Length: 81
Ligand SMILES: [Zn+2]
Image (tube, rainbow, N blue to C red; front, side, top):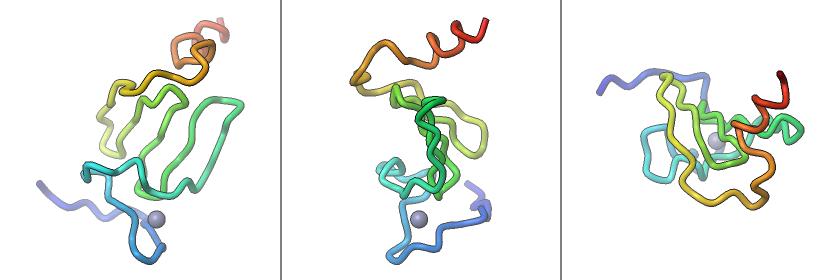
């Protein structure tokens, strides 16, 4: 796999990269709770329902039950209509 340089983590020790098993342990650099997502410093967008969008465009489905099922990506999208 080609290692893509991301505008990256400045933390010490460095946070796990997007391909690491514990990638969601990276620090949050931008948080938008009103929209239900956060940006991690390894480039991953982490959604409130634990779904993830990786910097290379891959999507990881939610893997933990949401603490409050009323705001998932699906309901947030539906409420915009
Ligand atoms: Zn970091």
